[in-house]
Length: 215
Length: 185
Figure 1 (cartoon, rainbow over the protein chains, first blue to last red):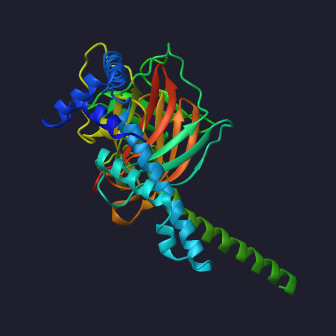
Figure 2 (tube, chains in turn blue, green):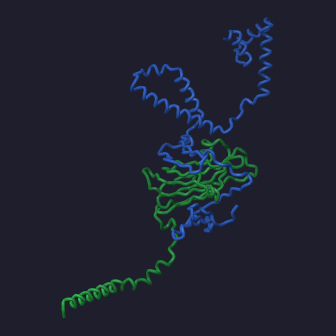
Figure 3 (cartoon, one colour):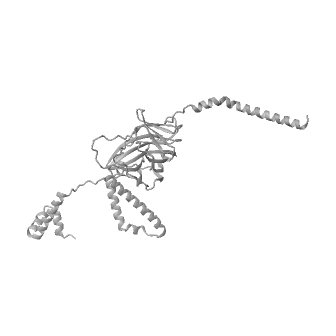
């Protein structure tokens, strides 16, 4: 616990003493060598920290991390809600005892902090839902969640093989398409009406991309 | 004429009548046959958004996400269908740079499969499973990388609520597929 002298010292170092307090404290410094030495040490330490530590270091991927924190809090709150619903039917515990839990204050503070940091960008409404998924290749696992802050549903695929760095991934801009039902092909056109690609299927119903040079 | 002769005559008559009826019934078919063959041989017009029944329209894009700043200073590809794409992707993926490699606006046919192909390397196959409430669309999706299907999914796509599919890692980042259902038909 800080003594009154420590508090005065801290405020003096931060330049927060009033016009009355400051001469009184500096008189104390003159009279007390130990206090003076401590003040000098703390001032040197502060200068050292300011010189070597970037106090406003930007958080990398701040949007992503804020979003993930918010997602986690929402998930925790949903879990708490489920537990509460279950418990309410059987135990008859008073809601006042739940409010007395120290965790409620920490949770409320965290939610408030995140709420101030993150401005919601998504509009309320119906959200896209991944109803089911199947990964035919072994080693690939899928999971899905709705990211409220991004206003999007995310389908995560783990275990995918990375594409070699020396391979070029070239995008195309498709304006419209036409399907030929007789030969089961789809021709993709650019905005000038030029043919970009033709999608067909082989005997095993796997897609074949025809046109333009293959890799 | 005995009974046996009468019976043979009756049978012969029956056979003749049957043959005549058969020939009579085939005559119209034979007359129409050349027209049917010609019709079958005639090429059918391709199915386009103008004439085919459709359940909706989607916009798809292949995005390369990384945290490495662009060095060539090239301008970002505009995405008028999805103006705040980078901002929203940044909230779901741990990257700072989002480059649209390719994009594709596509009608979702009611009776036929549809493809969303912003790149020949990574693309989506869509089969409509019918419209849903509030402008939504039920889809069977297949996410392909070349000739390998990475995931098959049944998804209820809603307007203004895109689907982000985290694709394979590439170079110092990751490929992300974005699928957005456009409002209206």
